[in-house]
Image (cartoon, rainbow, N blue to C red):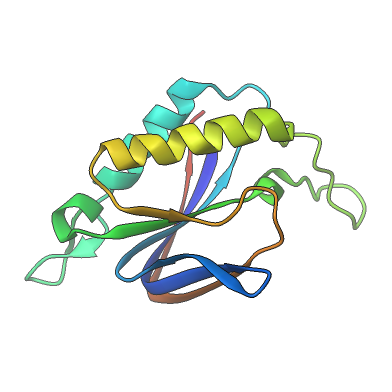
Length: 146
């Protein structure tokens, strides 16, 4: 699994003109799943995300986690994270998991985040989504389970 983490002051996702998820302070996560990913990958990344120390403490140092600041998560499925652009000009998405496997692991990942006490909003798996966010920093990190 691969997760792009963007620290955000506010974010929302809209599908067909309707807001399906909206947060204030926290993370926007773009979540991709590949063929050999398992629940262990989702568990590893959920733990990593909620404990990642990228929020400033009173001295202005990145020393606090999402749990420490009471942040929220907007989680968006993103199969294009596994797009291969090395050849030609059109991405190859063969490394992305099939929709049934990806949906199952994406939902498991979001459930694990919720079990850790984080409020999680989402888009709609497989839908065309408009994602708006105010990057904080900006701070953007890429996490992988492998």
